[in-house]
Length: 549
Image (cartoon, rainbow, N blue to C red):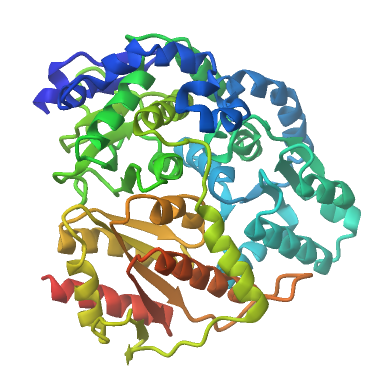
């Protein structure tokens, strides 16, 4: 904590970054000074697409709109107010969107205590539960930048059919939808055919940088959030982002890069208890998908609390985050972070976006593409067309079928030990769960349990949600990851209307497709299939607890 408080904080518009100078000094030469010497702060604030090299320049030209989208987004405010008034009787807001189309809105509503149902799963049980919840009072925000996201299209189809099955006419059903997508996308054409409201996204902003566009603002506004304040906070901090000093975005980005280039390329994201619930999940996608490519990258590790295991380590940069601190508060919420980032949510969004783009300059990666995401999608499509590959479990113990990689122990405890013990000094373990994140929420307890057992960074992601977040890093980042995939039996499936597959089949194909993509890159994957989800999770948690007790 001494280093954190010894140096001056970088503060602008109520957002403070503590500890950046100390992290920068840990590098052989100041990363911050080098960036300032290249005039990076002013060039980025001005939207210079050449910052990441000539190979990136063409794409960056159309992806830097996030720098001032908070200004253009004000044009949405009158329409949002009018729409919220028109749909006042539809007080159950469902957001069907993946990754950058849903994470910001979820963060906003969780932070401000407004109800929002986020549907970012293909688990048939969770989809069925959403469809059964206050259907007549539901407005569905269908959000997809490309307009081709298979999960979101499936959700749209399921809700449309549910409204018709409830006795609504097509015109009545159309009133229950709002679409957010890029102008000219296939989803916009579909929405026109359905006769539903379309609110255009900012085409100059990529999904994970879209927090302050229609993707973040529309569902939040319909859920009752006063979104103007978010734009005001971003506007206030934006004035500082062109300077070499008193620039929290530069301080944060330089510190992330300095740590990553000196052996601390895992970033533990620690909520400090001062609000901003869910911000870590949003930062996770931003950092992982923007930097995890070409064998490089910063691995974000979202931990549950300042006391949770896995927040520290020789190759870990510990970063706490939260709302503004009151006088006399010590940053970190009880842990001793290397960095502490505190301030209003709108300013956090813009500052982290800026910092990620700055870190990418130093790392030498394109912060706007996601070259390895397509691998899992392509595999999923092939599996849906031809069926899943036949595979027999290596062993079955209670409610768990073990699918161990060749050459590893076949039993549950042996396979787990082999996977965890194989995580090297520079490695990490990723737990990915193709389950119901409400009914099977106990699966998330595996992250801290395994982090304590392994003594290494452990991440947790719900499938297929993580495919649109850390999935890029898993396949394109440093090849040091090990993977534990959980799947579960589906006893009551749900068809996807108008498609030759069900949600259960889609979920299974996505899990198999990602396993194949990881295996193709030489990543070790242990799959555990729960024939009874509740019993299997209890059995697994007990096994790991007894193993490392």
